[in-house]
Image (tube, rainbow, N blue to C red; front, side, top):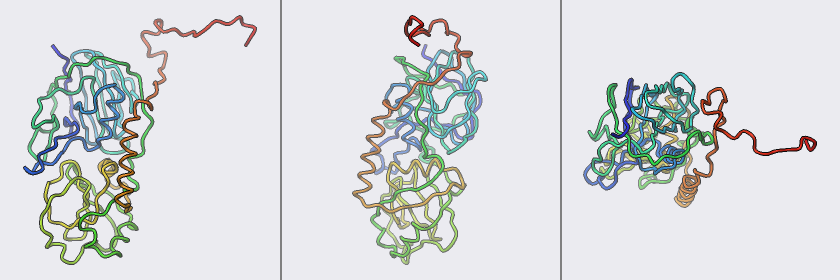
Length: 336
């Protein structure tokens, strides 16, 4: 019987997520998937497996988990407090989780979405080509206490590894390329968008993030008469009251609000991960600059395995200490 991950207590929104499902926009279903796609690639690098495997996405806080067999786990995304049977664990990092041990994941210290990966992935049924819950689309649901999730076959591999900390969890600058409707907005309005200090509104969710700011809105004459058309994650719609709203993983597939620009894909996670009140600023870049940024982001994802380092372990926590070769060589004693 394969291992199962048991949810003893669940945070406010724990869902199964992978890279999402493609090919269904024409049917009204957006891609969905992880709010922070980079976190899935980081988890795959830490466990030495495919980035397409499903993990648990935890919004704001995690929960308490147990495993029915020995498994490997990894943490990525928004740093959260984590402990195994009371001993603190490194985030981001990969660890062994023995059968029957208790994993506790608390609140996010920075950012919004943390990820719990398991060796072999969360093996729930595939629906329309993906295992992701798409809450807005009615596929899957937030997980409750008592749920037992099947774990896929894990070929095994090393644990006790980590990655350098990333800065995408505290807001910051977000690069924007022009949209098909950017020219609807006067140049002064576009310039003011770049100059304005925004904060993420607390009402953000997996569908979109509304911006808070001081001053006049960013509306455009005739904006409410725009014909509804295809929209994608990253699009910045400007509502009737002049408020910019960044569309995220579970965005609708069509919309009639004018779009002042589109956040480049590699910066969407910065918007999604920002906690309520976190500062955000938009900066327009050319389409060519946007493509260059995406190429660099792809190179960085491919290079993640090379950035992994070994965690420094406390000897007091190493039950198998005597199995390690602690002396790497022999010396006469007079050459040191």
